[in-house]
Length: 358
Image (cartoon, rainbow, N blue to C red; front, top):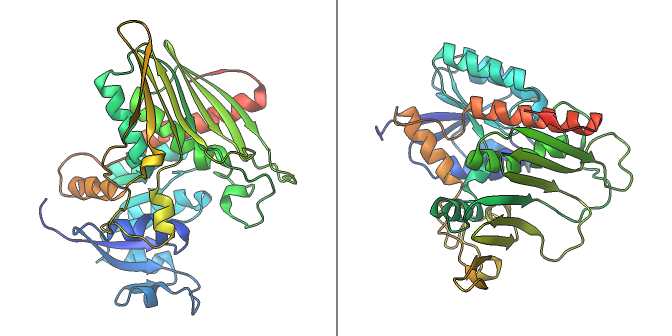
């Protein structure tokens, strides 16, 4: 890398900024936490106190006018992403946008065009490409240990059967809200990253939580139809299991089944940071199981250790290289536009009760 340091301005100081962005880009020497937009700091919630020396702005206009800001990270609600990102690009800033990128594929394509015209990098934060269990699965796929893949199941199930009263965008009837855009984007991104876009899509979008009368989807099953393979995306909120299924992938030579989510989110929420001992490392009890077809036609079963974690810091390491002119951004606007199209088609498929061509 060139050794250049990029001044970062963060828009928003909620969970996304505090947990999924600031600790991670701060772990990369190419980035300096320079400024934040926090409209209403409180004594117990003030970014300027948490990070002495940063600039604290009350409006995005102030941030965009600051010529020292090289890159902006948008961590606000999805319905605000388009306008904030467009203004940032047109102000001469590189931009990272929290997922879901924007509510519509049309908006996504428009922002990709604006970034190209502005000569600025635009990246979308699909950080779960750096989940250690997904990287373990990618290694299996590349080695052909599983053979020809027939079925690929990916789950993000939890037992939360009562209505969410937190007021989060994830459970409010606003553009880009609901489980398809929240968790569906993570799960479908991993599939598309590994196998490309499907030929057809079938969506079943549900409201499973008791008392959910707002019309916001909180559960989904989405089928991605490939030539010779079916990928199933499931995110449910009525799943009373001690160990939740994460992956079940079946091929002609073997299968891989794994329970439990990647540990990084919980570690970051608990205050652990990149570089701390054990960060991103899964306990042995969370490792997946590989079953292969033996020469005699029987089956051999082994616990497969999760690969050494690259961690979500890897996203910002790739981005730093891209800013230096070395390679592409970790997740492009064009890739994210295709993903948002799948979200739109899944919801339309569910509404119309039919499989859609992609």
